[in-house]
Image 1 (tube, rainbow, N blue to C red):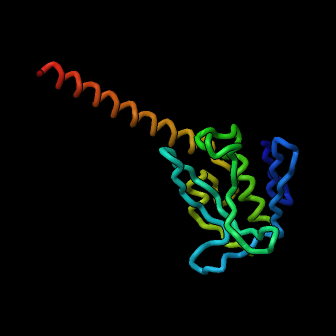
Image 2: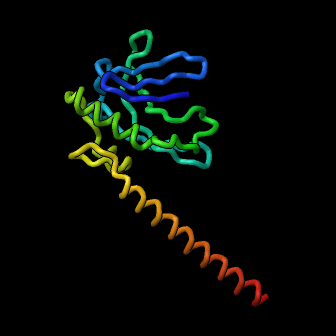
Length: 156
């Protein structure tokens, strides 16, 4: 599956060459004033957690439903990331802000997806720093755990 974002919308080209598009001019406002028109949602898929951008879009029958910005080819492989996933998400949000200023975008989207609120550009350095910090924490916890296991096993 190929994904691309342009000035008119979000487009998916499936393996069978079928194209699905979500055009910005058809995005809808949320019926619930407590929910932004475009927001961030955390979804648990088995042992993995994925962060999704959600927007409201009418289906074929005209019923407005939540749609996810999907970058995964298959739900079974939800933990495999598209190489430029973060850039696609940032460009998607930037286009919504530019082409649909009437839609309310939840501020958490910018934080969770490392998008600068002013420039609407993906902040690669901030994401890299967070990833490296997380890996260091995992490494330290692993070293402490192994050290404690060695001490515990030597005492028995």
